[in-house]
Length: 91
Image 1 (spheres, rainbow, N blue to C red):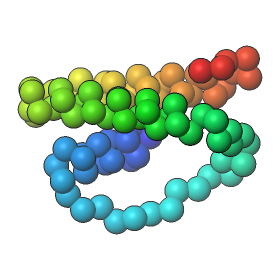
Image 2 (image 1 turned 120 degrees about the vertical axis):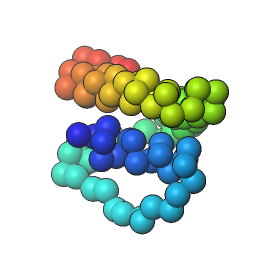
Image 3 (image 1 turned 30 degrees about the horizontal axis):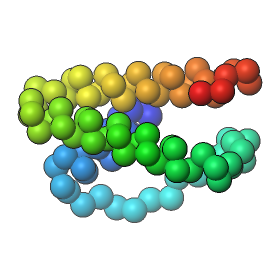
Image 4 (image 1 turned 90 degrees about the vertical axis):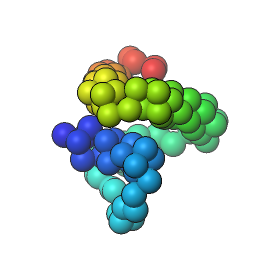
């Protein structure tokens, strides 16, 4: 669900250069996630690296790379879900 409704539309905007409406995304769980300013830089660096890599794949392989891009996004969502479900996880 997060892939189809959140990550894929963002990535499609990047690769297809189409306008999307600005929406506010808020959830009660947001209050449970600590904000640590020291992690903003590394997080944004990771996101940039990740999106640029997927963009490079799309530019090189075109539409046929979409299933692999979707799989990458789904795998990232699974990792995030796993890490946020475990208090011991530090990823």
